[in-house]
Length: 112
View 1 (cartoon, rainbow, N blue to C red):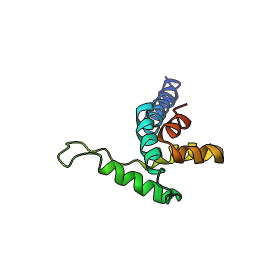
View 2 (spheres, one colour):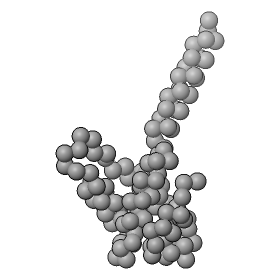
View 3 (tube, rainbow, N blue to C red):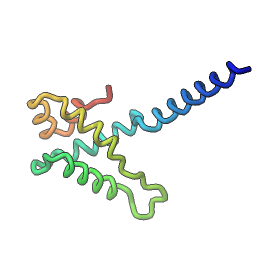
View 4 (cartoon, rainbow, N blue to C red):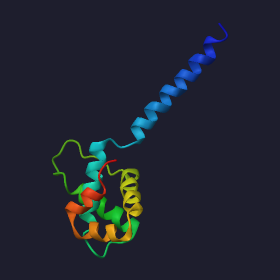
């Protein structure tokens, strides 16, 4: 009987950890949304600072849904950071290529 309680505690912690991980990580569809936002925003040459890029991404997302929409998704900075870190991992030439072409940007930042 004394062995069952620790096993249940470990199982509960494991299940809660898995649920938290799944909630915290973006799905492929969410990644695609934030990738598209990022690629659209970096086409502007004056946006190079991370914080300015995130602010612009949030503005674009906010204005992408009509005022009468029942559910407007909130901007999740952690997803934007994930896409930005993928962009930072690219070589400088690839970053410049991504800034020039939406299609190239989306291909370079494809879900892995």
